[in-house]
Length: 113
Length: 118
Image 1: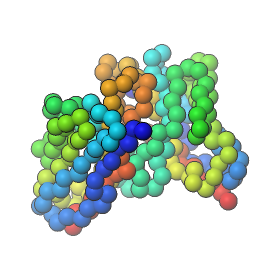
Image 2: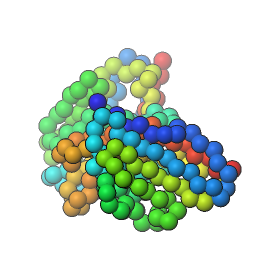
Image 3: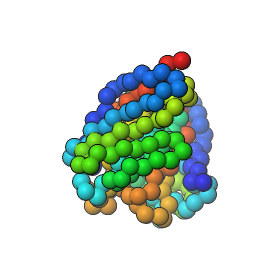
Image 4: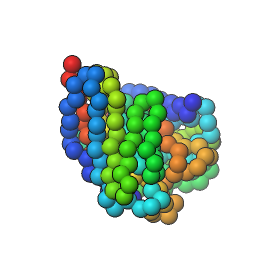
């Protein structure tokens, strides 16, 4: 799987947009970018994923650069409940049949009241 | 939809005993399940991958005789920690996927099991 790089921590004011960057410069053409988050002592929660087009759902937006070497997860109006560790993961056929999710260290996002 | 239930959420056991953790897919058939462990302030580490009806594939360094995985049905996988020791104390998390497109569908996670071995 392609390696991802994320800042270890970020703060964001409540009500503002939280923009979480992720670098995945070695991503292969058939690998997807996935975002999960983990609130303390819970299992990871799926947020969004994409291949090359930008994606939006009820939780967030995912912006993938044209060269696919980086992406940004956007939480449009952050709330205190968005405080969590956010993981950016690439997943696909880079290793044949390797469908597993390999977690990096993620970004600890703290929403400030 | 796509709910994964894990039981128990917390368990305390004595050294030398065995503990079984269950992972169920509630509203879909899970052809593949993954077991992770997580130490405090660390990321998730994959332990093994199990496919229904076949033997699990363990990651390097994970003892298959200590961490027994059974995936006997399309809705249930179990992880048994045998002869538990205090260093096995950790947060164990399962995830599952159904029969849909492999890479273009998210894996769904249970809420984890906090194991404490005394």
